[in-house]
Length: 265
Image (cartoon, rainbow, N blue to C red; front, top):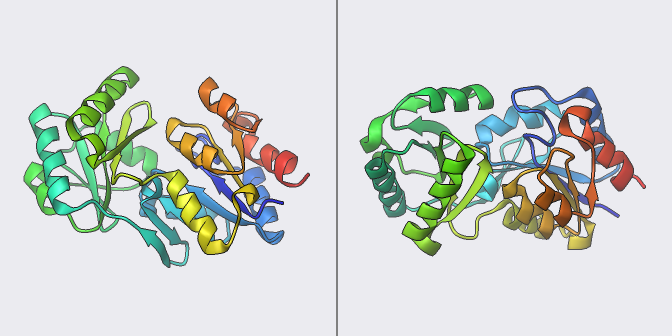
């Protein structure tokens, strides 16, 4: 029996930039009514994920910043991990030398070195507003930073920069691609998978009682950490091959279909 159901947001629960469908909302509420804890897991900042959770109409815990912060809709912090100041400064300096775009999140506020098309793209997709503070500003705003995020021109550029960052910083950071243009930088050990394990332990739920659903590379460890996993129809083949089940595309309410077929069986 499933006791904890974990869902990615973009490309899974909803199409990026759109609202959650009535069918998907009903599926979440049906699980909660049946006593299942539902959580959403995302690379988004808490402030950007909160409206999504509120749309669901239930007080679910939210795994945000790729697992660095678990916080309920009501505001209770269940788990947090922040990047240390010296490491943040080191990363900011590196990005400045490379002239790569970088943004930071301090106290759940969005900051970037300079405003450009990348910051505008991010703000539009996440429905949040950031502040331009320059490179020195990024070095000074280091309180409660769950992650740093780089935005790139293409998937090819993203993959190349992930390699460069891993070579430069090694095991001092965790780096993942959450979108063809996004590079997420967190503390080592931080991931959606680790957060799912932490939440399951707090709830007294066994791995076999956890089901996860997602579509992206940064969802893969989370999917593998669950007892049962579902890949969206729009997921890449390597995600599908790693999962227990495959459902329909996000645009076709594959989330709701997965709940009906694999949770309520």
